[in-house]
Length: 491
Image 1 (cartoon, rainbow, N blue to C red):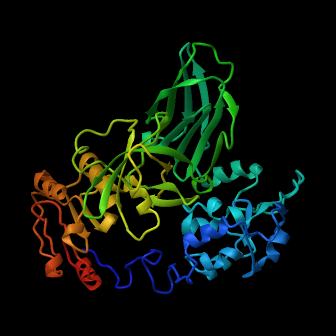
Image 2 (cartoon, rainbow, N blue to C red):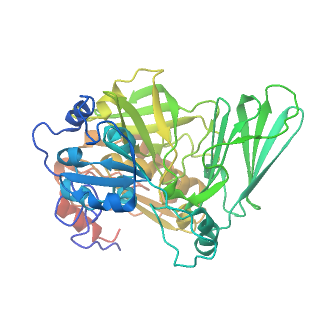
Image 3 (cartoon, rainbow, N blue to C red):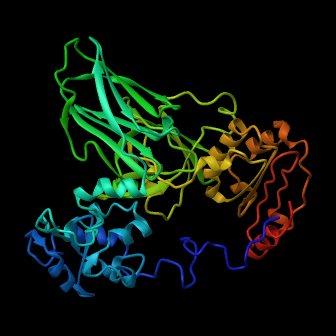
């Protein structure tokens, strides 16, 4: 039995909600589109009011600039004059004014952390926040957060109270190999917890532990080959990254520390890291949805966890535009066998192309061999909550089906207690249903459908589709009142 309150769809924080009380886009004046903003930033006009100078901004100075026509906002230690951007902001002027004259990092992260603000606001950069003078050792005033970051001396204490134990790393070598060992001190680490990138001499290994990120980031002292291996010993939480030397020489050191090396900080404070991935195929799935296949660089290890997403970034008219997407399997069948092999090199995306959109037409224009920047994964879905399920009910609409692909895959291959799965899929028309034939085949072939009873669901006659043959329930429903009726039924 699933009961949904009448006002719960869309969710209060959903971008689909247009009523007051939830964040929504506001109608912009003529000539205030994103493209118009990009043209303005490239016009040469002074958007900072400082005639090209960059300054250090104190907290006292920042607080003075808190009016609509003189609005400065700090994001991650950098201060921007956002007054020229007011009329171009899709969320409206009031949303920007919430952070006027203050540090807006937390507010920005809550609303649209994925937006590439550095590119969007680069012509509005006023300068950096001035560092406060160091406090004497005997200073005992209450610890405070400045610009979203604790002073370094407080990091260890905070982590000890609020987060997991800080990891550590070591390395050793043979004539031909270098092995980096990360000791996470956790037992729930797996391959998708580790993200490795090697570019030129820069080696970067990020380990995600709960809501924290541990980073090993060094400029290697010698050259290595492109391919490497990543091994996780789950019962002890140890990660081994094996690199192949280009020359059989002895290394005196692993390399020189780079930005944030050996750091262990909350994941929300890390920023997004991108690598360029090559488009290797593009296939039609429905009349307006395509399956894109991107290939990771040869010196990258990245596996997107179930229920998480990444961001795709493209340069459009000189500005980098970013959009979030959930990777999928290449089909509903290819991985319903043994667990997937480590070090996958392809990432697939089911993406609807909006002809009047700003991002997807550019994505669709890419040719095979072109590149798209792909970020590290993000998301707070906890896979362990599926482990002991007996019945799984999935609710999706349109391309919101994409997160369900990997959830289905994981559930049917890794949850022995699972007895049945039901998927309710809302679409405007039957032609919009993604992977319809595959869903029908899956519903027919999976043995866990034997105790699933067929269900007739009310809906507009021209949109109804019942695939409840034995296992999955798939329905196209566009009417919101019908949706609430459905959610009150006992399936």
